[in-house]
Length: 269
Ligand SMILES: Cc1ncc(COP(=O)(O)O)c(C=O)c1O
Image (cartoon, rainbow, N blue to C red; front, side, top):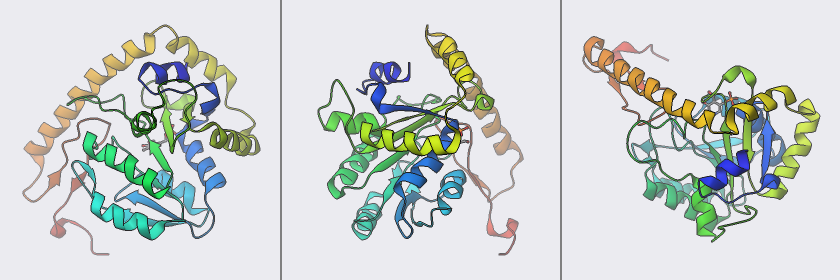
């Protein structure tokens, strides 16, 4: 079902490219286990998802934090940083997040640069289907596959893509998926056996039943509307109640926004 859905959205892959995990959080940990050696450097946005750093800290990597604006990471800084971390590890963007949605141009550039410098990308995309404004943009994995001219069959590119049922169905069922090159997926599957042998088959069957005939797609449309309304209520409440000097983002999707307090309102370090 996951491979079929990805293919429907112009990302050509087969079941050999897919691994079901117990949440994306487990996938992040397994990626650390398989790919990170002590001292490796990972390029991350600043700020980024704390759970990824918590998962990877155990593997003794370092981070290079890259600032973003509302269109995504700053690519010039990125280019310099990529050169610095050549022969090192990988990069971790969240193209739809609490603060920003990467523009199409930045997405393409990120994919091109990572390919040019041979740096794998971990694309963490839990919120891709929860967009309330603007066009639905292709994922980095899709763009990477397009760039390689892979219109059918197995995906064999540079991106390891993660997404999850947590934000579109239920977080408690702990079900997510990884799509990546078959060789990498097979290594991650081996590491997973050491962690939990397999992800709850009962929950997988449940998600399959919900997803196989289009109910999940309809459900996503409903929650998109609900979360859109909630976002707008939150934005209006911030305008009404926040004192001068407080700033916040206007996210085009996802479940969070980022509020920045003026210095006078923050605790000294
Ligand atoms: C960016 C990001 N990645 C991964 C996860 C983990 O998701 P899951 O519930 O599938 O483990 C979350 C959860 O909030 C998240 O926000």
